[in-house]
Length: 115
Image 1 (cartoon, one colour):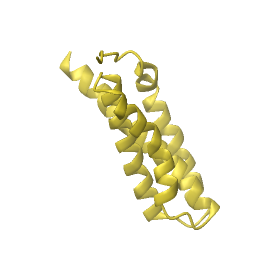
Image 2: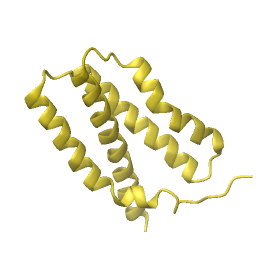
Image 3: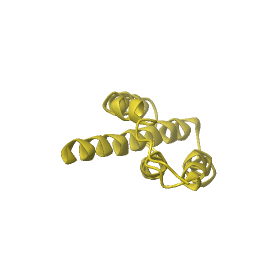
Image 4: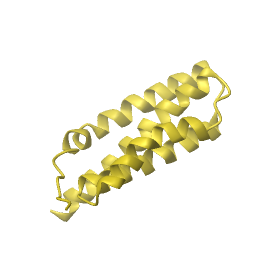
């Protein structure tokens, strides 16, 4: 039996705009300091989006399998994304959290528009 508990992720949802700004600044600084790893950045943003969508489904009571898949996503990203340098790892982390925050902000805006 699953129950809907949207309040579980609410604190994360409310911090999503700040998270977007912080991760964008980190990626911007990394771009100035290192060569841009565009493929790594694209994969990581997509992975963050998917991870957040899966965890939102879990928070809305869709089942525990969504939690397991959602928290496994960062590990999957480290395995799948080409990490050719430490800069690529920085892009992976900042891009992942940017995508995650972007999905949470989208969820927040959708929930607000429904009210």
